[in-house]
Every structure is written in structure tokens, then in C-alpha cells.
Image (cartoon, rainbow, N blue to C red; front, side, top):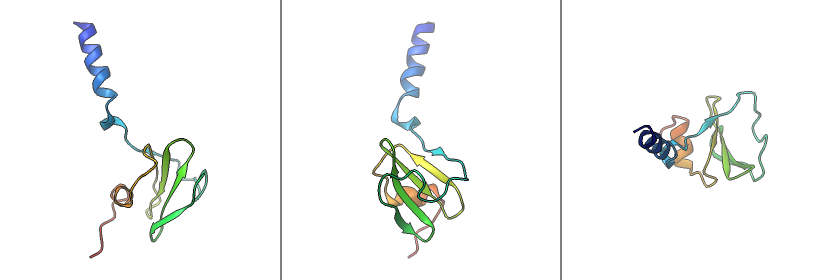
Length: 87
């Protein structure tokens, strides 16, 4: 019974749903650690590729995220930063 529970919990915790973004120390300067060009998606919303297949996102409110997907879209970055679309 324990083996089945362990196998199920391991399978569920390794799914792509648990590949969430990680929050980076707020002291990280914009552009620090970038290996690709810095893209400005909106005023004070900066995105760049970092080592590995990750993307770093700097939000206007000061939050910084590392995303596992190197091809993060602007829509994802705006969602993480709690920005709304302007009509």
C-alpha cells in the first residue's frame, strides 16, 4: 500500500503543473544574468533568457521571476506581474 501511495504522489508531483516559476531575490538588477537580449514588453516589464532553458522576468512592482520555459510569452509575463491589457 505504501509503495502505491509513494508511486502516485511521485507521479503527480513530477507533472508539468508543478513546474512553476521561482521568485528571485529582489536585489537582482535588471539585465543581471542574461545570456540573451533584454526585451522590454511594457514599461518597466523586462524579459531575458538566462542560463539553462529559463527566462527571467522583471515586473514593474519589483518582483522578479525565473520561468522554466525559455520561450515565455508576453502574456505570461503580464499575468505573473498582475498587469492588465490596455484596450
